[in-house]
Image 1 (cartoon, helix red, strand yellow):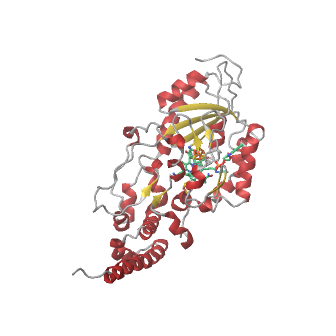
Image 2 (cartoon, rainbow, N blue to C red):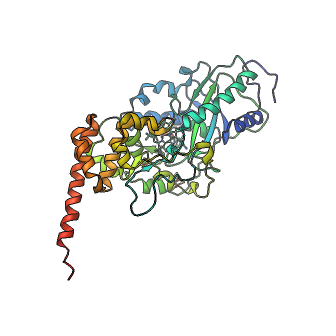
Image 3 (cartoon, rainbow, N blue to C red):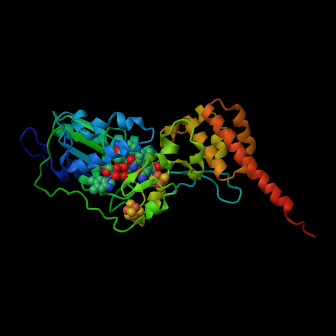
Length: 379
Ligand code: B12
Ligand code: SF4
Ligand code: SF4
């Protein structure tokens, strides 16, 4: 439904936007007013973000600090930014079966749900393009800025203000219909949105007295309600951190090969929510056993991961993580392979991690042998 209005007002209604967003494949859309220079409803988010940076809780994600000004004042990204359209894309498909079952199952690690299938950046970009084409047809002069994760935008703040859900104690945006397992995309527009239809207000906070995510986070990374210290977060270490993972952090990574879903798996709002379409996300079922990651040539491994979020760490990062999982899970069958990498791997980070993993596995292997020797012989 197009409306003839003043130049600075977007000429479409919320229901028309919803229809286009649905057809483009998003599960929900909402609209939030933008404070181009910060302030207003955005001020408490800005304060929290600044405190997070000031406390060093961004770890070595220096890019979060470098573009802080733009995150705080969207006018830096789009002069005259006035409206944010926020889109929600559930991504948790039925769990892919990555390895054969049974006692001879090769050792493997856990992968975060968002990385089970196609890269959500690509899926969302394709859908956003459809919405943008429609917007530009209705309003050719409008200027836009889009963010799918990588833009300098506090995406969850806009999504909450747009009524898509609330920011939980885990810091995850929680949708009442589909829980936390979804991705966000945001479009800023330099036109105001006015409609006679009711626009969702900011979603009220509904965590109540629950503290499951805080209690179950294995590293204590949710340091207070709605604050994650990346320096403690497994997701940060296994996905975002480049280089060596400090020795004291390695044990707490457990069997997480890429990302971490614990604070989401324990969230009651994820119980009984429908799973996303496996067909749409095409969950890949590559051989991601630790052995495969440790033996496949890096360029071959990367080629096989094309179009998957797992490519973010590149092959050496995945190898580094696989070595830590091998050590943590005492996968002693991998010891000869790990020892080879400790001598041969061309990547210094992988080589150093392999030296450490070989020591842990040797120790575990010797303990098993000693226990076997100590057992009384059967008569
Ligand atoms: C940096 C980053 C990370 C970092 C830091 C995480 C963090 N919590 O900040 C690391 C690498 C650890 C990370 C991990 C993950 N991430 Co991440 N990440 C981002 C990124 C790029 C920026 C987030 C950011 O601005 N952080 C700064 C801090 C200050 O913001 P915040 O934690 O959201 O804090 C806000 C709330 O706490 C809020 N708040 C909380 N309580 C209250 C109370 C009141 C009264 C108010 C006003 C505000 C408020 O205020 C803060 C400012 O808005 C966004 C994409 C984007 N451009 O936004 C994706 C994003 C947040 N990540 C996402 C995902 C999926 C994940 C993981 C689940 C991946 C995984 N499975 O391993 C984990 C989850 C860990 C967790 N519990 O947050 C999704 C989240 C989707 C959702 N449903 O919320 C996003 C939106 C990407 C996307 N486009 O889909 N991530
Ligand atoms: S992703 Fe894992 S480590 Fe990070 S806050 Fe959630 S439970 Fe804790
Ligand atoms: S686990 Fe509980 S406290 Fe944490 S985000 Fe979910 S509802 Fe909120």
